[in-house]
Image 1 (tube, rainbow, N blue to C red):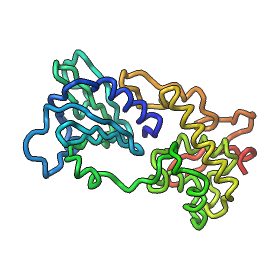
Image 2 (image 1 turned 60 degrees about the vertical axis):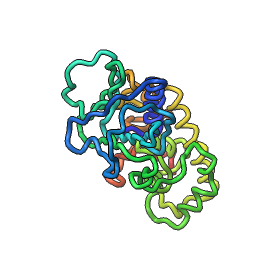
Image 3 (image 1 turned 180 degrees about the vertical axis):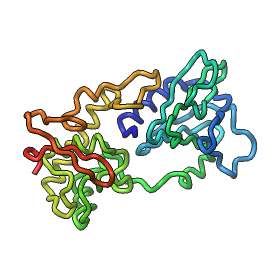
Length: 267
């Protein structure tokens, strides 16, 4: 599933395509992919983007007619800009059509992704409860330690909880825990204030590094130009056999997900 760096990279590309352009329509080709707020009356298109932002793993595009698009890529979704569209792609579940005929294809083999068309005033009803953004000042050691100090769940599971911190996923949590020297199965209440400070630092560092190279392409993720990100070349433990120091890595299942860690570097 695309995580914060991948979603932000796609959003940046989306903004560059939609800037000063008119969206003439949004079409859905698979049941459940395109969701319309029931309170919408007349067709909300044509419309222009006036603002775009990311909240966790969600992209929100606010339009000039008090409507918004919420785009959630989920596991395998991707947006691909196509200035010369032809037939609908095999896995194309929806498309954003621009004035002049260009399109943004929403391609999603697993079909879990969603595009919602909602009244901007009704956005909160279509968004889950999300914690602070990990790159914001709100995500600091005091917040993290205060949120986990009484929790018995593994720290990896806690960091994946979008209500605790928004936008983190399996790849970057594995990476930041390795850099922090903390085992993924350490109970939250055993994390010290010092360890919380270290985790916050490495969370911000690894996300910033991934953003600088367009995210991580392991399987389906692509940028809006359908090219891969590059951070997969810099991963230290995720889907690796050895850590950078040459130690054999372990892989345990936590919350149904693979958790790569170094038994020597991470105590």
